[in-house]
Image (cartoon, rainbow, N blue to C red; front, side):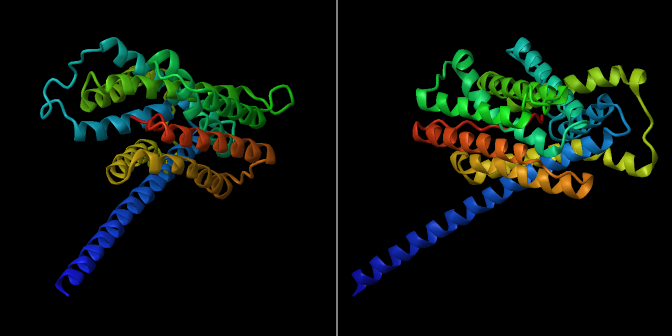
Amino acid sequence: MSAAMSLNTSAIDIDGGDVAARRVRQIGIIMMVTAYLFFAFLDSSAKWLGHDLPPLETAWARYAGASLIGLAMVNPIKHRGVLKTSALGLQLVRSVALFISTLANFLALRHLQLSQTVSISFSLPLLVALLAGPMLGEWVGPRRLAAIGVGFLGILVVTRPGLGGFQMAMALSFVATVCSALYNIWTRQLSTRDSWQTTLTYSSLFGTVILTASLPFWWVWPHGALEWAVMIVPGLAGAVGHYFIIAAHRRAPAAVLAPFVYTEIIWMVAIGFVVFGDVPSLWTLGGSAIVIGSGLYLWYRERVVKVVPTLTKFTP
């Protein structure tokens, strides 16, 4: 009798533990989805500001906000030696990649729908997998290489070069994604050489210093209180989005969270329709579906070989 009760109690404990673990993972998934909602706020606010303000000014607001929040988290007084790095060149080139990615994305957003830019940005995992071979020695097999090829066909469906659909803005969006892929790879390399505080500080301060120094040459005064208020959104949304990504990865493995990156297309389409009246074309939706399918297959293959990198947008 006592043995049976003991067995039943053990079973209840195990089930209870499974339920608790499942709930923690579900919270992590919700946080991941929420993070990409905030990234959608970042891009949509940048697009809205781009109608009246120069992209450099929007980028400055993005960087300045990130720097202020970063300094609150990692200030030089509390974290002495935060600027000391064992890889100064790598820190600088990574910061340059982030700067170009941010500026190219904001330029593209002036002319493209949110659904178009996010569809192109979904090629990020494909680019990282492709570049990881020559840059990190992490070569992909033939199945993943085929998935990457199919994914880039999806990008061609979205951009339609030579068929009247291609614009220079689409090229800028792809440049932003390439730079973001390089940023991710160099971040991975730096993770074993410098602290995250040092890497965060360099990526935030680099763009802030350059843009602040050139501020007098392109500054346009925002029109009214609403534009001043919206200028706060890019930096704040980026910081909050990254906070949720970090919190999500504390609660669930990257292999569980990775597919939920693609929920951003839902937020982008919804915000694009409500705020800008944009309706995505069938080309955009079809190409996006191809890219997402390729990304999900790539994620599956990486999970099979126990390598699932954590990829994020170009936010310090």
